[in-house]
Image (tube, rainbow, N blue to C red; front, top):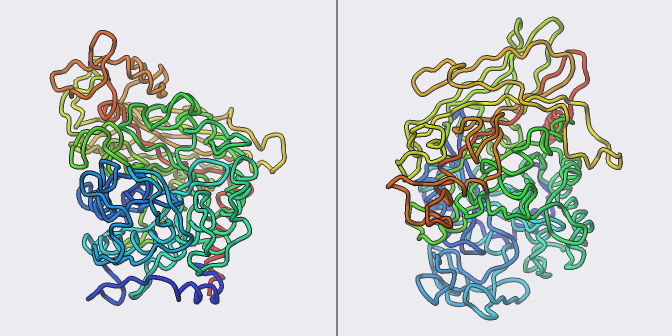
Length: 631
């Protein structure tokens, strides 16, 4: 980690709640994940009762790491403040009025889960929420350091996996951003803290209006004001936050905008969505921290992804947002510049909707790891570390999977025909003159996924396929290519461009075109001679092309709103499904999610030998220089 000034760290350390555990090894070996090399699954966007979730921090971490088997887990509540104590479950969202929820005023001075909170620090603040009127709140900078972090360290110790503290920032000028600053969370010996994550929340979350300097820990930045947090002025503040990360934690932080289409396009006077130029601004300001965006969670919601008609595109498309699902759309416009700007996905868990925390059905969200997984590559033979998670995310060597459609047994490379030099996701293959390129993909389909339903997929029943929801199969994969033409300069007419006209589905492969071994599949495709810089990315789905209400003739996902036209007629169709005007059950909620699944892999960049380095390569060089100059 590139640290801030030693004086600042020493000052911060005075007021930091250090966390240690009896009997821990000096190297904290229990604070690691599985050994590599290989892909490891995680989730970095989810919520608990500290803000607007329904379950406690411990419960959610245990669900993620134990029940659903994730290898790493980043807890990321919103910033601001909250009235409820997140050591307690509160699926009723009413504090202590029913169930086991608690307000902070009811737990001060009492020990729960080996933690005692004696005071609510910072400026006094109240809120009317979750059944309380003008109830005192705890600022998130305090709960990050004194509640979330020690609980996560205890769960890391229990499960022998990584539980990391993060933040879903209420970002000025836009809606939300997933952020992480590892800082001193995982030191080589005991006594770690989440001070860096706490400070970032205090300084840059637009809902954190505390002015106390975190109870006197930090000097409040001039950018931290309650004014100017919307629209264009707010966006400038967001860029300032990226610059803070890039300056102080360039190797151990990330800034990843999330559910970026949900609030529609950017508005100059609101806190709405993101346009292409905003992603460019972030990536320019922090090339080693602002390296991608996150798709929608809330996959079991009545409007999938919690994307209503006001979202860009009017909803989700195969569970993904319009920017990702559209071939030649916004994501492709950024890749067409050669940017290190990658795609990720997480659960955004809050609640099970009409169901309780232990129920298997859901009309809102899935737990981390239950439905969606973000796989990153642990390149070494040593166990995965928190720094390793950040490093792996940054490389772009990752892929995102809905519904357990494929497993961690995955390989995606582009290789030269003669010298057999290969590159994988996030890397650049430099091709000598006279050589062709072969693209190779290997994936594995599990025998079963986590779906609680074993009745035939109603989406596939439309086209005569009898396939249980808990035993999906990949129908086809698409290889998508586009030209790379170089960075667009700020202020130029093209800086707001959100399309790439060169992008197209270059090849679609079905089961008839791959080599199958058991549950595995291998595809080798000759891309041919490369005469100019380009990229190739891949996606796959369980749904054939031209499936009514789900895919078009080319296999592209249609709007998920159309799935309301698909009937669910099997005796196993659950009672909570929506019904149409004829009182017939239709595909919705969690059944819609288990019916229509996709995986998306990040791109491989390719250029001819002798051509200029691409921006993604320059970003890697920048990182290498930072690491080399570290004390």
